[in-house]
Length: 243
Image 1 (tube, rainbow, N blue to C red):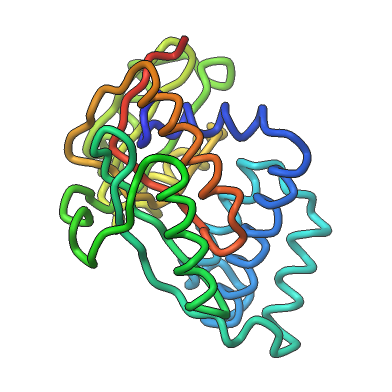
Image 2: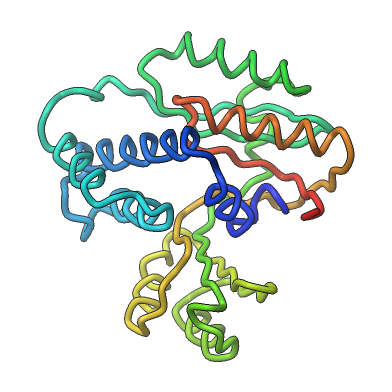
């Protein structure tokens, strides 16, 4: 399992308890609301909304929740005072951690996140301390049980502009430049190939292997950060053996 492996993260979220899944639903709903408020309710021409809807689909968010979030974005002013920024820091073993934050109280969030880092063997860092280790990429995950023709899928996405194609035991992971997200997504959609995940994310240039106590502490830190209402996304450059 690695901090940037989308499939590892998807499987962890699928196995999450109801409380954590409720937080995931709330965070994605917030993303949809803000996306609608900033760019309108039509995903055509609103890439941020399109990405949020893709994430909602991958996480099996009920349609009524999605519609409610869209309506909120079109209507009430609730949520208009949210700020968006990033926090950076280090986890156990010197792991680089990058966080997407969306909050209506910067002081509260800073104190909460700093406490979580400290509690789980890490520490917050200055702006720019780890961001240079990550690149923004479009990442797609296709399950083999959905489409198992490796050669056809690889040729399809590479022709559409994908940069990399990796075949794993039970999934294919496709990486592209952010600006090529729509081209690759359209190529998959036109072929009727469903994705387990399709989003623009932060991918580390290099990863660090963790084991033992450091691995346990790192997973605990990631879980704690993801449970925080103001942390939208957690990116890290760790690798941990699946077992």
